[in-house]
Image 1 (cartoon, rainbow, N blue to C red):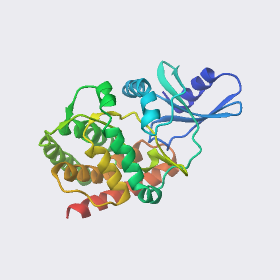
Image 2: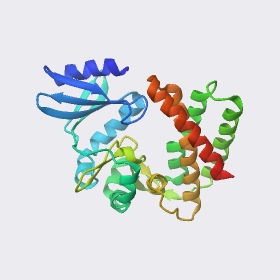
Image 3: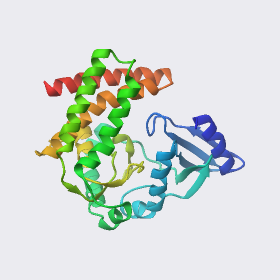
Image 4: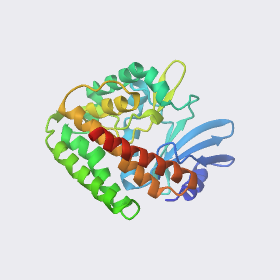
Length: 283
């Protein structure tokens, strides 16, 4: 569904006098996020972009009460169906998106939010059966990287594509060795732009990757973006490598898929920086 089609269908659901503006950079390329207004009330809407995201938003809506009460998530006001896709409606939160610097300063506060999530056994039980670290890392990183290789082929130089493919294969071998049981509720993507930094609290956004998994996943994302020292251990080592590769390969896919010229230029520059940083980290 295109952003313009989703917007028109969303406006039909919101009713007369409503307005909605697509915010493509809030949750990544291809995401259908909208800043809305109904009368004097400001809202935020998230429309499922594809069937997989529809399932994820359905899971999110099912546990939205617990996330809002216990885990710093904005409450879901209403679940709509827009063009046959699940759509979540939220209050507009008057707080800025956290910068890397702001999250670095409030890292302990963010870590407390994540630790509480990881300790929520009742929530984990609602999300599904226990898993393994390998399965968790595969779902979050390897599956995406495999898809990204297909997206960027023909856009990055052939030698770069071959190098990235070799690195994904190497990462897959490392991930396969992580057969430790994993049974915690994990957010899956707590990077800076998924935090809002209010004066008296943090808000954690975009729970579509919520699943049973290894807390190292969330810890690693926070460490990667705040510059904290990394603990020793195989899971943290693999997670650090995956996040460095993510900054190159997944951002390259964002560059290829972006349609806005300004976004494309920014993503291309970011992918090249990420590739250089990845190679430097491994040298």
